[in-house]
Length: 328
Image (cartoon, rainbow, N blue to C red):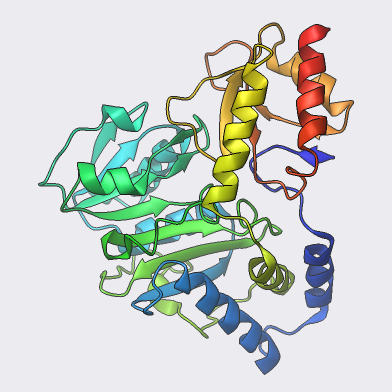
């Protein structure tokens, strides 16, 4: 199957092999600690190359990482951008931990207004539920004095802004099985070491984590898989941008339209001219292609992710199948 859902997605054969190699390893042995430390240093360098940050790798999903970041790092009075289901999820976490916050609702980044008084902002970089992109570069311009907590679940590995704007990043969270193109099981948080941590939770208390630290058992096999995948992954913002732009151009040529004003490069929303999502999903599944459900309230909408390692090699097959769906 070609998985065009936003993770878990298709992985390399060698990623699967390294996952198998790691399945019979003890997480307290020095050789595993070396593997983990190397992975932590690699990921941390993609945000804070001068090692001015800290990193936590924990067993869990993107939501687990999001909750750990919010519960441990979010200050009282933080502004949360509610731009879709995952922004709303972050607000639910803020409510659960009784962290005082302000909400700004937005459908696209164009809805946000310049404000130099806001000090801390939480936002989703690629909002999976709407497929809208909130550029860190533009967010820094809209809120010139703010530091940002970023849900990078659907963007880490598809964005190259982090190092350039590292002085504006308070923290970001993501997972192993989306744009990094590895297997599920790991939630990851990277944060500025100057940000104060709060002991609002136990497992998600980020003060317990850092390079070389292993406070709790990790899914060892997922660490081995991600260590290999990150070392071999050549995908970046440029390659993800190219996939998005090619996809939108090709599909528009036979009447499948993009629904996004600022489409994310890892997942894009479309409207089919004559098929419902269920009809299209069934049609494509028979051809070995899995798409994702559409946007609430928009008929014939569906989503396509560009995260799969099979995406580039299968591009012509994907386009051909979607073209055929418009003819039947």
